Image 1 (cartoon, helix red, strand yellow):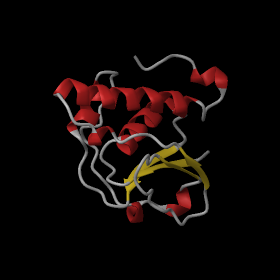
Image 2: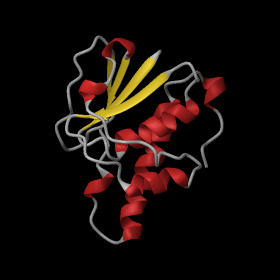
Image 3: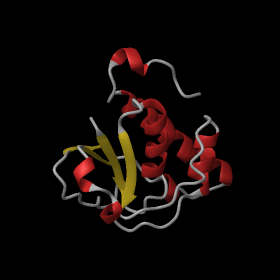
Length: 141
């Protein structure tokens, strides 16, 4: 894997968190992007959930899939759950990790943040499967 792209619709939560986690745990030579088909803005809950484990994505901004250098991407991971995933037309291996959108959760601030934490933890587990076993040890938190 040389370049991985995490895709969802708004590029505001799941894909942004995946990008932050992947940059932390994948080998440094792997380029990592996130994008969406209808980018909005990064959710404050996504920033908070990653800050809890020492990853700062407060400088991230939502991007369109059209802004990603397709020739540098060899792996695309779509993260859409219940919504329709964006398409990527580049030549790449495709994986689908259907995760629920934590931004769709209603409830108290704590309930919403817990939804982001759950997706964060699941993303970490799945991203670790992309790297060789010896390098995959040691959790974020």
